Structures are given as structure tokens and as C-alpha cells.
Image 1 (spheres, helix red, strand yellow):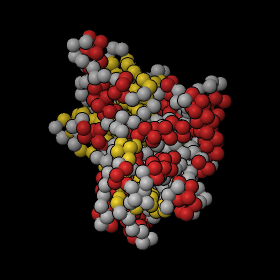
Image 2 (cartoon, protein in one colour):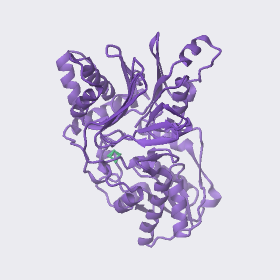
Image 3 (cartoon, rainbow, N blue to C red):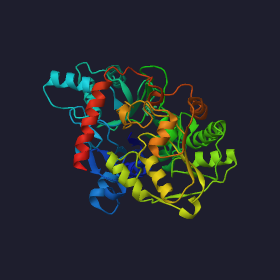
Image 4 (tube, rainbow, N blue to C red):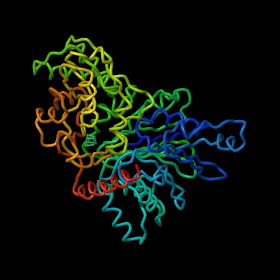
Length: 480
Ligand code: SF4
């Protein structure tokens, strides 16, 4: 999962893109990039590994080099979380295709990337493209450069018919036009924002929050299979290119998006609150009682509060987060994740000793965090640990942009709740039901591939995807 943003129509677009990326940092921490379009110099690009605040500074008027870029009115930004391809800094986006005068930033994964790549290398006798994002760039550029060059929408149509997967893409052309499009199932989110007081300013981003931070006050979710094109004169064009069953990723509401955002008209805050209420019902059905409810900070806090309120059990902050450690789920190896958890969470021992605690987490994927938390609580003399997950058991890989490509690494794969509890060292585990999830997220359809094993797209090429991703991870773990 990555964060993407594009801004058009206002001077200082670079600084706006930077602010937006700071509010998208939770979507990827491998590195980031910002590209501007300059009338004289063409594309200006800066890409750096690591956290945005460590590598990027706002541009200042009194510095000549900065002042030139500050006049630019178009900027494109990306923050990276690696799935396909290793965490090589050369894979940081945005990517540029000079021949086509095109740059783009991508969030998601193509299930058939390795098939497309084989075909591409075969046809063009080149080792490129290196990732699914550069594949998308090449396909779009190839069509835009074709003789009798088609309209932009025809080029997107070509991409959508070639590519299978979950993707949200924003980009720019060197004439100052910007664009965004979303996969036909709408698996990955993309929002269009406008300002009531200046309708010539446009922004598109992975979530509403970074745009509302910039003063955008009217938001529309770009529809699944829809492309938006704001031309060099600032005129907006839009078209549904390819329609399919709308299946947004349930993980956006459960874990990934910022709690202040809204996706597909459903506020993340309200969805997480309802996840807590519905999870409480599952706990009541099992007739579990406890002394205290606690969240695993931060994502599950709203759900834990709602659960405690529904069960009429005191809510307490028992695990205190060191705010300087990044999100553990999106670190790129098991070793890195385990070490991060150890430094990240500190228990309040006096409140834990001899108590039965319900620990609410957003999800239990590999079980690394959950097992570590149980160990921390046991050391504090806890009486019983009930692990409660706001998401149903994750039993199948994600092929659309989250980093769990192999069933065997999932703690819930082919296990009963009792076996999962035993492996995590807990007294019990309680999972959200699929019905509880669906009624909390209030979407007509959802992607629940990793819960049910039933995916919204073809996954014929998935074996290739899983094996190559596992190899990428081995390379990363050696680097780490
Ligand atoms: S498989 Fe799971 S994590 Fe991946 S897009 Fe679907 S719901 Fe989201």
C-alpha cells in the first residue's frame, strides 16, 4: 500500500504536495518522491529513502533555486510501501517516461505483472520494467506515443484491459495536465478534491484527509474504472472506462486509512466504532467476562472504546506507544517487525497484574505483534489474556497491495480459534464475523479475498506473484 497525491492550479504546488505526503506517511515509509512540472526545465524530481520529514523540507521564497520551483503550479507525490520489487531506492516514485512527457505515481499491485513483464521484455528486448508501477507507465506511454495517438482515455482503456489487479494512479503530463484513474473493481481508493472558493484548483489523493488539510472542501470518490483528466487549460474531463463489481479493500477501514478520512462515503471513524460494537457482540456470544479492555495503539483505539462501552467494562490504556517508532505492519521483514514491537509498546504493570484483559487489535495477520503483546502481559502478571480482532481471520494472501503474499505465513491459516490462541500464548481469541465486518463498513460489496479466499479479479497469475514476492523479501532480509 502506498500514498499518492497530485495537485494542479496553484503556485507552490510542491509545498502542498509535501504537506499532503506528510499526511499520507502512514501508507508507506520506505521512501517518498515529489515531482513538479516547470515551464522551462520540464520535470523536476526529488526522491529520497526513509521518512518524509527526514528528507524533504518546504521550499522557501528567498532561495533562488526554490523560488523557481515555487512558481510551479503542478506537483505529483508518492510515499512508498514495497510489495512488488525489493526496497531498492531506485523503485521510489514518481516514475518518468521522458519520451511521452509523462510521470505517474501508483498505489496497488498488478496480479499479472510478471506475465506482462515477460511479454514486454520479449517484445522490446529490455530488462525493464522493474516494477508493476513502471509497467503501468510503459503501457500508458506506449499507447500515448502510438501513431494516430489516441485520446488519453483510449490509452487508459488499453491499460485497464491489459492489467489485472488493484491500482489507483495519479500522474502528470509535461504540458501541465494531470490525471487519475482507479482499477475497475475500485480495490484501491482515490479521491478527487476541489475548493469551493477556487474551482480551478484540483487535488487527487489516496484519502480525503491530506486534501482537507490543504483546504479542499468538496470530495468525490473517483469511481471504480473511472479516469479523470484535467487538461492543460484546467478543464475537467471524466469517463468510466471499464466497469466491474465494485469491491473496495476492507483493510482501508480496518487498518490502513487515517481515522479522520472518509472512503466511499463511509467515515473511517464511524466504521471502526461499529467494528467495536459488533466485536462486542461476538464476545457476548462466547460469554466472556473481563476486568478491563485495552487497545493496541493506535488503529484499534476507537473500536476498543466502543467495545468497552457496549460490554460495560472499564477501558484503560495499558500499552503505551513510543510515538517515534513507525507502524510495524508495514516494515519489510519479520525481524524488523519483531524488534520494532519490542521498542514500541510499554505496559502499565500495576494495572495489568492479576487482571483478565481484553486486548483489541485491528487484525491478527502473521501474529507477530499479538504474540509479543501476550509475552509482555504475561511478564506483568496478567491473569488471562483475551485477544480480540476487529477483522475476521486472515487466511489467504493479498495480491492487491498488502504485504502478505503467502498463506503459510498467516497465523490463522488452517487453524481453529483454539489453535491460534495456543500459538499466540493467549487464553482465548475472538474474531469479528464476516457479517459484523460488512455491517460496520456499510459497502454494497467489499474485497474480502484475504478472509474468504474469493477474489474480485482473476488470480490465475498469482503463483508467479507469490513466489517472486517471497524472493524479493529474502533479498530485503539479507539487506536488513
Ligand atoms: S485481499 Fe484483503 S487486503 Fe487485499 S485488497 Fe482484498 S481485502 Fe484488501
